[in-house]
Every structure is written in C-alpha cells, then in structure tokens.
Image (cartoon, rainbow, N blue to C red; front, side, top):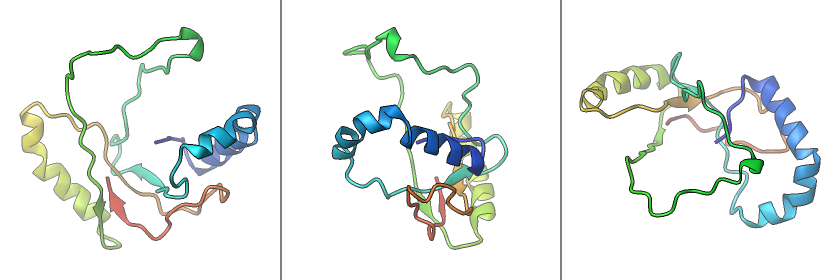
Length: 137
C-alpha cells in the first residue's frame, strides 16, 4: 500500500520512482516477484482522520541494516476486509460501519484505518487501476 497527498503528488512520485535509477536497475527482478501489478485500487480515507496515523513514524533507512526480530511473540493481529459496494452507498456504509464497530473499540480493538474508492482519474496511466470498483476497506 502506498499513500500520497493527492493525485498530483501520486503522479510526481510514481514518475520519479519508475523513471529513476533504482527502478531501472531492479525492475526485472522486482517484476518477477509480482503475480499481477495491474490489480490496483485507488483509495482515500473513508472520513476525515480515517487514514493511517503516521505521526512520528519514520521508515528505517537501508543503512540502519535492521533485520526483523526472529521468534518474537505476536502481540496482535490485523484484519483487513474488502466490502464491494453498490455505487453511491459509500457514505452510508461508512457511517454504519462506525456505529456497528463501536462495540469492538470498547473491547480494546483498534481501527487502524478505513478507506473507500477514490473515483479520480488515474494520474499515472502507466500503472493501470481497477476504475470500475466501488469498495470500503
């Protein structure tokens, strides 16, 4: 999953990455690991504040050379659900979702994020998207 501050930022970031030296040097090896790179959904937060909270988070650099801790016990589980919706029902579904999952939050569950389809024109056509989908994730 990749996030951008908007469709123009998406276009610029993807153009820089796919037109840059890292992709040029590694594209063949990367493409061999992907079953289908065209299975892409454009998403946006389902409501204000529903995106991932990345405040204070920073991705470690390759120079940090940190490897995952082996045999570390699991401290939780992430569940991702994709709900395919009829067009025009996103707002009602999102409201119902918030109401009906409130009891889970009182039982110490955490909602990390909620997204709906972004019905914008694909700003980077080199990466096709599934434009006719209508989802809540």
